[in-house]
Length: 295
Image (cartoon, rainbow, N blue to C red; front, side, top):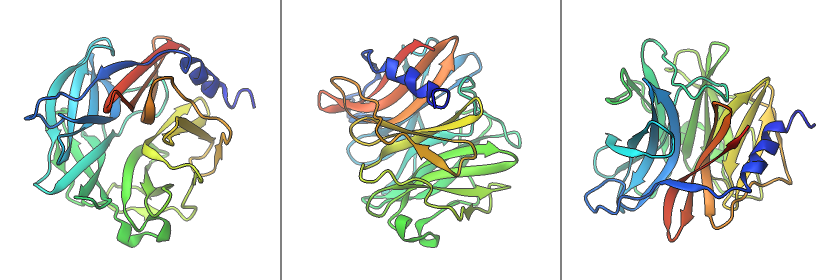
């Protein structure tokens, strides 16, 4: 068991540290992220770091990006994905390399790919894809939406959110949260990004009675896959060898002092340091935090 939870033990050491706010709401009433920043996703590209995130201005959720050279000081680069009025886009996940020490975007068919949630007003959404040649200008995929609730089962028929797009063994795995009561984790698979089939094992994980918050994060460390997700109190974890059968660390929750409702963790290893980004509330606002420690 010790080897199986080694990564979790390293994360527990991080919980003794005080996370630092790296991105806050802009407080500019004309900005798309004036009230909230959420769902961090970080990748290294062309010598710098890019932080993709969801911003909220009180009416609409949209996607933006910030850049950094040191992972701690971030500069807003602006809005990257917007939809017509009345539609929200949130929780971006870029297709990337799978290992903990590879926070690098992956080209497929000469393009970068992004999965996101699209929703309308108060309704939960469907899952869509976009593609780009430079991570700056994005185009909607012609097959959108790639996954909707209406073809799903009872546990997901209120809507789909929080995609995680992974490529493994020549298959694309699109993990997501299905909404109907307590959120549960499901997955759909595809060989071509066009046609998706839900896995017969769905739902893969139900963290009942805890309520899942934000977007799950999935990464490979050695021979094991790890899943981390917020439950309103802290972060829960599960591990797997095949991405289908998950073992949940039932009695373990990662928490931080003076921070409320942490969610949407994003974890990677860089130059011997373990970096954890996440969104959480502090001082009545939602920020993006970072905590870093030795691996």
